[in-house]
Length: 313
Image (cartoon, rainbow, N blue to C red; front, top):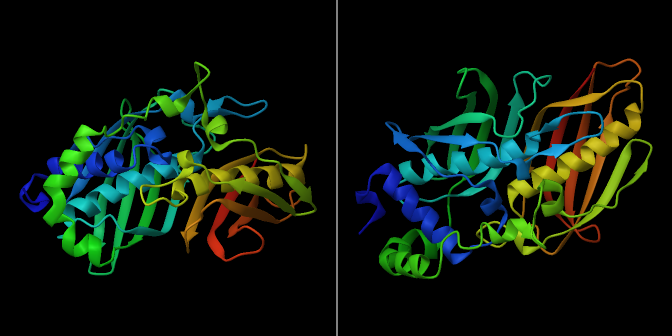
């Protein structure tokens, strides 16, 4: 049966079952996101209790959800209304993604009850534009906002053959285990991992305003298409940016990430080089910006660029 004839929620359940069934391992599985309901206009709502394994604890601060991880959640959630609204149910590929905390001094902590709403502002033959709002479910307070732009064309095979083979794909996915590894990948030697364990150790070097590292793309870091997940790129970029800003600020002021954005240019596979450059003077400025670039290993082509805005408190 065509996904066009299904309800919005059924469409998403079928799509997620297929995508995770065909590649049951990847960065998206650690987010543990599921759509709660679909409203008119392809507005998708998901109730989300922040998992502890996605949080991290910085020295001298409380355990909190990094903004880059929240933006990874935004990445998945804002893809869903596109799948519902687009006639060919194309998930597309990310071009630009941004997220901002309304009050960076009040971090999102483990088990915070979020309600994340995503709606397609505009969808055409080539591009789709989405807005995302994250609320505290208990208080109704808006805590974060985001924007997502996607390039929709998926190629001949997807666009003309996907629905023709939908029953076969659904059967394969259901029999061979959609989500079947989502819990296993979070366990290592019987101990639950956190986001830093999932990313893996990063050996960084800092010289002046620049910080560099190299990142190996493992299966857990990938998207369903086999490339480095955009959310994983966001997390790695934030870690490098924070190291650079922290090194420059030293003990003068404490940097707190307010907003970030990523522009995606090509697929990252195997090994990538990451570099952050900090702009601004912590002695005089109230905010520092860190620009990050991810490249293919050995000075290869750009995979993505990011911009991170830090308040100095």
